[in-house]
Each structure stands twice: as structure tokens, then as C-alpha cells.
Image (cartoon, rainbow, N blue to C red):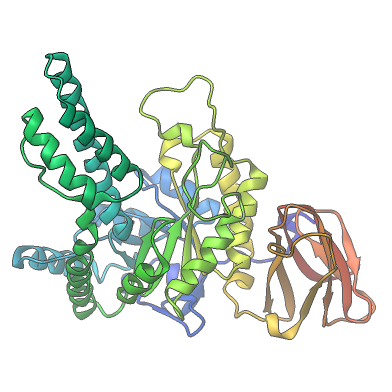
Length: 468
């Protein structure tokens, strides 16, 4: 069944209509975003709209939330095209009076604009506590290594230096950074380098001050604008305990995950699951990091070679296909994400296959918005996988939604083998059927049940309907 045969009317809610009043946002009990009282599943885009043509294309594709810079012109442009916006607050971790005043000024300036929906905290802020210091350590280590080689070239062969270097490398390679740093200081004295200005081993002592600054900043945002929610996006890293700690300052949490292509050349995730199903795995993990709070997942809108500074004539790491793009979206949805957003489209061509594929998937989801924004209803039906020869570590995940008497079932097979299942507890008489989105297949409902199946690592949307 083709998406355009769903018979769904164009879904522009009152919260997205052109008017001059603020559009307050809140979170319903189940975590669904409410804009001016209307529930919305978030379909977001990081790339800014730089022209009316850009904004029109984004809106026509079905996106309902875009990132904008903190300017009235950017908000006005989005509003003209019925788009809601989030403003990134990179300076929300405040300490000085000047930083606090600047943050308050930004919030007070834009809080009443009718296109504003979300404030975003600093991107991947928890991961960057480690990552930035790790990269600075790599630079320091490289400088020390070069100084050692230069020392030897000058004929200053010292047995002590050789011994220290061996131990320094050994401690570094086994994450014993404090011991490595003590030895490094001895090496620096020998080769004539100044004392290191930072210690990687002390990275965790920066977490508490950062958390306190985030509490201070988000308090300023909420005191001056209680009508919009705050979202924090994390990297697909960090310990669960640290995520739970930092998750306290957010209303909405999420993370970015870009698993295509699967293989040793892509190391975006450090979970055991690093293939497409890592999207679902991280959706579940982020839910654990902030119990009771909604999760928005940031999905792949680029190929990894697109991010290289130098041009690539023959990309070794291909962009996601339509099938992969669709799978990642539905894997997040079936694992109860309350929104998906795309990052990286700034690095691909507007006429590219990937951009068209993303728009295809978003348009599909936009048409399904009445279901996506409806309350979860898994407790009213049963999905029972058939026994298989697999390990059961991965299998079927699913989400049931009901809207105006009609049902949608978002079903994802995260396993690397095909799985069949029974779906029981369905309503309808003898003419009731299940239609498979993007497929010609229909399945009659018999005694409230159907049997269906999915190939390995695939997704499907099942919709109740009637025979003609």
C-alpha cells in the first residue's frame, strides 16, 4: 500500500498556524511534545533554512521543527512557512555574571516569538568533557614524542630517557594516565619541554563544576521562560550513571547515532551493537538515563566521507540507503522515541539521493503523524514472535497506536535473521484487513489475529483497513 493512499488529511495543527501569539510547549504525561495544546511527534532538521526556498522545501517534506540561530529574521522565516524552531543555547553552562546576563537576554528576547518551541542545551556537553581533553592530550603526547626523537638525533642518547619512554608508553596504552603523566614530567625535564598545562587523569573533576553551571543556566532559562521545554542531546558514549546525573537538568534527552556503514572504519558507537539496530539500543539506553522523560534521537543525514575536509573522489564509506534511512527512523519509533531529528544534511547536495530519501521518509512519517502523536496502546493487543533458531538477544520490537478507530503497528526486526509473528487482539469484522505500508500485500484479520513476518534487520508499518 502506498503512503498516499492512507487517506489522511494534511496535518497542520493550530500550534503551527501563522499568528502573532507565543506557542507554549509542554510535555504530556507520556512524554509527547505539546505545542499550543496540540500533541506533536517531532520531525526535526538541524540544517538551518537560509532562504524562503529552503524553508518551503523543508516544510513541504513534512518537517515540523528546525534549528535556527538566535535572530528574529530566522524565526520570522520559519514562522512564514509554518515551521517551529529550536534555538541552541551553547552558553547555558554559566558561571560569571556576564554569562548569566547574556543568557537571560537571549531568552527574554526570543521567548515570545510564535516560532519558538524548544531551547537546546550545549551539544554533547558531557562527552566533550572527556573528548576535548583527550584530543589536547594527543597533541601534547605528539609534542613529547617529537622532542624525544630530536633529543636522540642530537646524539643525546640517555639510558634513563629510553627507560622512561618505555614506561610512559606502557602506562598511556593501558589508561593509567596519572602514572603516565608523572613519568612524562620527568621526560619533559630531560628534553627541555615546559610542564604540561593539563592532566587528562583529572578530567572527571571538571564534571561537578560543569553540572552546577548547567543547573544555574537552566534555572535562568526556566525562570525567565517557563513556557518552553529544554532539550539536551548527548553523544552515543558516556557511562549510564553520568548520563543519569546530567539528565536531571533536561526536560527532553537524546543522543545522535550514525551507524552507516557498519564496519571497522566507523566508530561512532561503543556499544556491542554497532549496526543499524544500534539506533534502537541507544533509544532504550537514553530512556534509562532519564526515567520518565522523553527521548529524541538524532539520526544520520550524511555519509562519513562527506565530513572529510579534503574531497573524496571514490567514497569508501557510502551514505545510507533509503532502506537504511527508513529502518533507523522506525527503530527509534518502535523503541518509543518521541521524536527524530536529522544531522549532517549540510554536508550533502540538495539534489543527492540521500536528501531525497530523507524527505521521502519524513513525508511518510508526516502522513502518519496522527498515529505517531497518539498514546501508546501496546497493552490492548499482543505481538507474539514465533520460535526461531536465534539466540533471542535481538528480535522484534514494536509499538501500537490507535487514532480515530484505526490502528498503526510500527514493527522492527532488530535480528540478523527473518522472524515471523502473530498479532492478536485486533478489532474488525470479516472485511477487516491489515495493510502493509509501501507494499501491495494485505492480510485478512481472522478471529482478531494475523500472521506476518519481517526479513532480517527490517521494518514495517501495519495499518488496519477494510476490504473494498
